[in-house]
Length: 380
Ligand SMILES: Cc1cc2nc3c(=O)[nH]c(=O)nc-3n(C[C@H](O)[C@H](O)[C@H](O)COP(=O)(O)OP(=O)(O)OC[C@H]3O[C@@H](n4cnc5c(N)ncnc54)[C@H](O)[C@@H]3O)c2cc1C
Image (cartoon, rainbow, N blue to C red; front, side, top):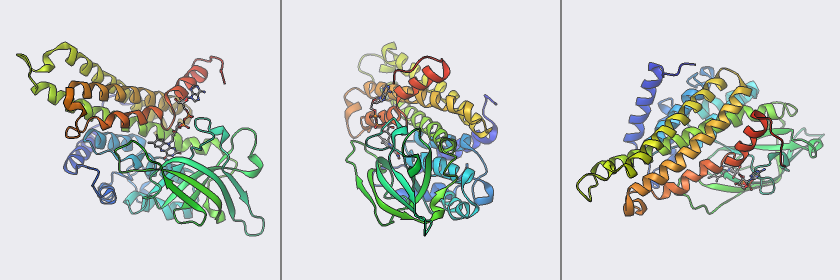
């Protein structure tokens, strides 16, 4: 694994940074147009196979793109979902027809896909999900019933990749199966959740009330279960790390610029170690998290799903913690201005917490490392 970035990656980083800097995203920005422009430059589909209109890269390149967009203050949350989870699962397990139908459109930005796994009564325990798929014997259609919560971007997505379980697998360990549910399918209802987040992408509660889907809505094998699901969940964790590192870098850069200028005694506040050292620590933590993210992406792209699983969890954990701390310190560095709308940092306090909770919480990662890596017994 190259520890120092290749010149191609550095050039991609610079190109994305300059694109994002020239296209600042404010709450009024047209999400679709921004997404489309980024896609036309090859950024959104950089990980998807060339044969289907993608850039032929991997999660390594995709997380680099998201990190740079975030560092410029214009992160695209749906990149974690549409190309990273849905694009990956369809490229790895979809039929030829599904690949042709979805991948070129996901890559060129003309279509977008959301991802729904979280359920109100299951939460972090996804083994408990109850969204159930029943196959109708005569027609071969699938009938999906259940509820999802906190699903991002369902309104702007053309379809949602919904995680369910088959009727005969309703009890026991989770055998997930994945369905593409087009946005306007009958019985597929959404209600926006009122979040304290200053973001363009909204979260939704979903109700699937006897949603009828054709046989080919199923992606992959109904018995391949967890393997297929984790093919999408590991990229999701790596991309959430990128989201967090980008946001942390953005906040830190704003704080450093402020600390260099703001003078209330004889020197700028950045000369006081009480201000400088926490900013230096935040920088170190973000750099360390990025190394783990690069390791996870490298393992994933090399086809080592097991190794990538552990690294993706650790990267997501490290990046979220680094982001929360960086944002907190950035707000503090600006004093009263840290809490004004004008400087725009206070809303990041809530946004940074998202990466600590989703897609898998800090505690569930600590559980994973305790049990899987350290071999400690389970409390639950
Ligand atoms: C902004 C945002 C966007 C999201 N987007 C999506 C999306 O697009 N698609 C989707 O499917 N979901 C999405 N989610 C949902 C997200 O993945 C869940 O919120 C997350 O998995 C946690 O589940 P929960 O909220 O039910 O918390 P719970 O599972 O109820 O957990 C609550 C608290 O208890 C702790 N806890 C639970 N179990 C244990 C344990 N065994 N040991 C120690 N602590 C424990 C958790 O760490 C957490 O702190 C999103 C969430 C947010 C906030």
